[in-house]
Image (cartoon, rainbow, N blue to C red; front, side, top):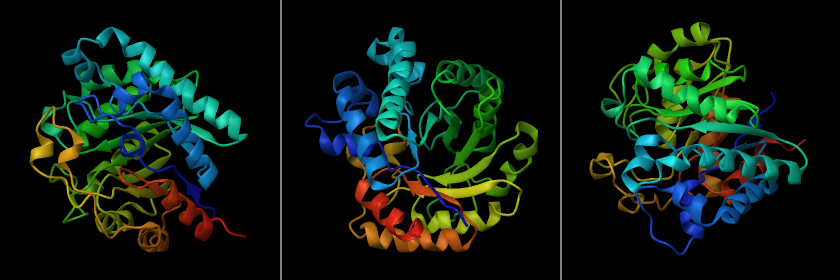
Length: 292
């Protein structure tokens, strides 16, 4: 069974390498201030064994830029994120580029997202900006059925493959963060011709619960977990900065890879890492899953 290895987290890795404190713009701030740092992270993930570079565009939404007075940079920031990922891939010599489209409104807060039809227009704008550069569109960290629907509906305006990734409850991986069953996203596979179904930005144990519920649907399944202790209520307040989240102390590369082994046994063929999962984790996954 061939495993496709995603990269690890971008935003938290950038903050680790940067000397500046986090802002409400998160990884977008570093894209503007230190684009070469973004390129270096992509490069290090490829060197570690990743097959895919995910663009640093997760948080580039108009409603995120507007409070900082930089909405006019929306197009340029998306194009810059894509060009940096492509250049890192080309320098590496092979691999794919996934165009990241993160949740509108705020992460883990589907109640703040616009209705699906309205959100689809926002995502379509992003997908069109990414189309000339990326190999696939990755709609990630979707917390509800409606939020996921808006994203994949928007992504459908281009001809690139669509991968949908949802985030599940840290204590009950059978449920989206909205409380809906994770299986309620399954009808969208046929409706929107989704090519891969993933679970991300949840604790590894929750990902392990979700994957068996999504497997055997005729599409690739997988996961990329975060390394936080938990997503706190304070972080769910719009405008919060990531420094209020606690990094899990016992999730080194070997322990993380042990947990990923469980996903693979449940049928995962696409694996990687999200926030606080870095190049060393990806390197260990590559050693175990790509040997021979």
